[in-house]
Length: 343
Image: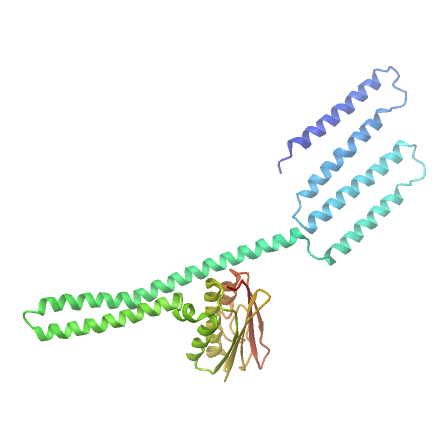
């Protein structure tokens, strides 16, 4: 640890002043006389000792460890002041034991009380930074996964069909004079491939930002989503006109993932989605009457899969939270809350 230049300079200046006082005493000629420079050293040593003690304590981790270390350093310096004052005043009854006991009791009370206090601003900021770091990492992971999915869908779907379309048109161009009927068949085949490629491109775009979400908002998009689920889903939406587009998109896909988990793992016969907006927060509850046993960070009990991890990472980017209630035997409810402003 690099020592601050000011602290080293102050220590050197204090030592120099103490040496000057000692030399003045020695030049007095009577070395058996009262050694009064001790009080100079004593007075100069107090601020220096406090500065070095706080410097040591400040190297501790921020928050409670640092606060306890500062308290301990100051208490030790104050205790040493009492002991040296006792030494310089002729010994006798060791009265410093009383202030030292008080300092120790205060430190013990601090150790006991500090964990029971609400987190201070520094700890809250540290936790906030940790959450932002984790949510940024999760958002980047989700973005990378989405890019890979889009690339795979384009490569395996539309791209393959467009390549086939080009080959069919090239072959039709060579046959148009020698075998017009075969060329016409190839052109018809190419036309069908064009329609199929367009449909696949629309599916890819739908996976990026569903058109129904832009047209009808989050409530209407979730209602449309529920129609494609094999389990009957009841949707209740009490939302303002529109919410921020990134929030709507994230919550839409999170809801879609919850409903997909219902179909895959729950064994439910019905499900429900409630969307509300209260106090500047979008609240979405997805529930089912299935077997329960789902867990955050994993699939339902006894099953594999990533479970709700993707949902948590998706919503953390918006300071959202996910709460799971899934006792054995059901029902299962997933509550998602995202702070946002309404239009």
